[in-house]
Image (tube, rainbow, N blue to C red):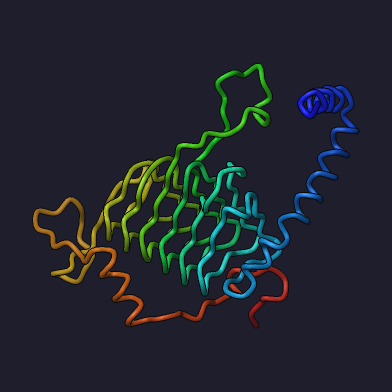
Length: 248
């Protein structure tokens, strides 16, 4: 009976554009009310403005002392599976108008910083059959993006696919990253390429590739060092907020 009703409803909506638009708006409001309790759990530990769009909110985890910039969009495409698919760590600052499209998982390590309009794209719309509207074909679900501790993403950087960005790395403005990035790397361009890495013997960023290079600490040690030395930073929330967060 339920399956038959769904088939009838789908046909009725397809034949009546205005009814379809009304139904979509009504459904969106109902889903928003259902999501409200999940949004409230962020209030005690993170800054998540109401302008931030949260899709699949019950599968999103945001760490302590983390700021999400206004008008960002956190989108977990698979609403039905259990567990968290998008994890943003402690002490992160996610800039305004960032975009997350989660396939399998997206994990952002502690102390990460992103500028405005950075995108993490682990899922895209299926386009196998152009005789279907792409908005109705669903999304891919296999991409896994992992960002290590204390990475910085410049303005408009884009991270696409199934990859890992090592801890301590810097992604330049406008870079398009489609492959793994080793720890303590500086990458630029489209497609992104490594131009420097931080040499811990020289205590400086050196041009890459280098004939002589000293690796940095493991991520666990690196994170412990950051926590011991810096603890919980005080964020400049005015740089992530909308109206009411201006600076004189």
